[in-house]
View 1 (tube, rainbow, N blue to C red):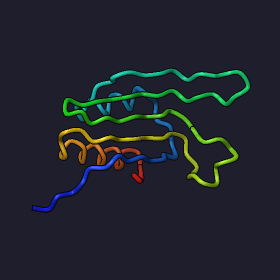
View 2: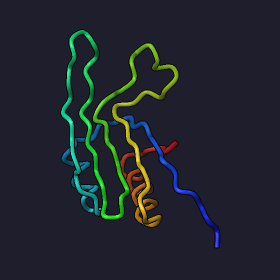
View 3: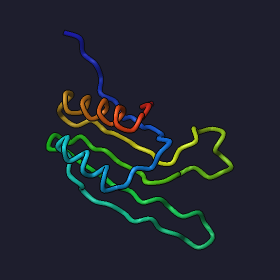
View 4: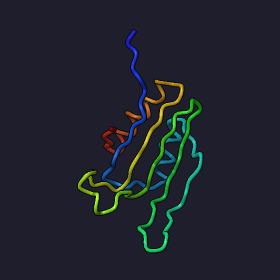
Length: 112
């Protein structure tokens, strides 16, 4: 049997889907919204994008950052993006792989 290591992945997305659409899509994959943090502005700093943290029953986690998180000065190092995603594996390789594939298909994510 071939063993593959599950990895923490991240992806940049050229669109920023509505959080309600992301939540509904992930609920269909068996995830629930664990917690969220609204966008926040601190003084003269750039605003922090809203964050949405999802989990499934096997411990797989998906984080959706609803906005850019790279300052303009560093944009050459990272792809242009309107949102960012992370996924962390839980106990089920099947559910983790399904989430990676379905999110990539839905929002054209290229996981790295």
